[in-house]
Each structure stands twice: as structure tokens, then as C-alpha cells.
Image (cartoon, rainbow, N blue to C red):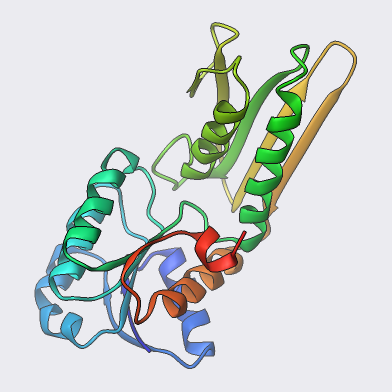
Length: 238
């Protein structure tokens, strides 16, 4: 396939490496608005676009791909308030979009563990649950999109939690998410249930960007030739 890379930072470069190893070609790379102006014709000659750009530019990028009839894989986070709008646009224009806040296969297994554990812990009021996420200092959004998904899954399964907050919880119905930024950290997410007698924790630690990059390229291969809105659960069948 001919793949366009929208956002050519560390993730974009890792995706390029994986794509080339899987015998794909990079049709063009976008890292600013000037690149877009120079690449309009190249977009028409692209099979799939992969977007790891910024929350400020991702909506415009998606619409440009839709207008060019190019399927798009989106790993950019921090734009959840527009997700339903983009889903409707995808359906209306009969385009294809694959979205995930985390393309790691291991993380998506972790999502399933989180839902199952929350369902079990809903019966045990003595345990309070918190989330901690640690990322590199260049990450623009906080909490991470992955932490938000984990929080929403917990809230859906535990009645005593009604909303998440990205700071110290002030009441029992708030789910606390702690966001930490450090140098040279790919990404760690921890869900902790704590009581007076013991603690239960599940942790996912990404060792490098390769897992995310491979997942994004697999998503591009999956979405090619399809129409509609897709997520990791569709590709992984979990």
C-alpha cells in the first residue's frame, strides 16, 4: 500500500520504519500546513493515511482525507469532544476511519482486563480505585486518551464512581486520574484498588513505540478497502 504519514514526529518515524519493513511505500509526509499545500495531488494517489499529529489539526486532517476519498487511521488524542461528530461525518460521506487512543495490542488486552476487574470490584465498596498514567514530557494532552478510556470503563461498571477528575478526588463519587510527565517514558498506566487491608493493581508498561507503530500499520492494512468507523476491538475481535 501507499501510506501517507500525517505528523512526522517520533511516532511518525517509527510507523515509517514498520511500514517499510512490511513492504509498504510512504507516499508523502505531512508535518505542517505548508506540507499540505504541496501534497494535495499526492493525497489522491494514497491508499491509506495515518494521523499522529496534534489535537488542533486532526479534525482538519481527517476532513481532508475524507474529501480525497482516502481512509484514515487516527492515533492522535485530545479531541474526544468531536468524536461523535466525526463518526456521523464518516457515515454520511461513506468514508473509512479507524480510531484508537492506543494501538498497542497489549494495551487493548489490558482494556479487557480493566473492564472485567471493575465488574468484579463493583461489589466491594471498601476498595477505592484510582488511575495513574506516566508519559514523556512532550505529550500534549493530560490525562492521556488511554487513561480516559480506562476511567470511563470503570465508571460504566462501578456505580459509586460518577465522573473522573485529573487531580485529587474531592468526593467518593470522583475517580482520580494522576498524570505524571517524565523524560524518556514511553507510557505506563496503572489501575489501583486500595482498601484498609490490601491493594490490587494492574499495570501496563510500554517498552518502546514499536508496539504502537505496528498496531497503527496493522490498522491501515485492516481498513484498506473498507467503509465505516472502526476501532481496535473490530480488528482484534475482542
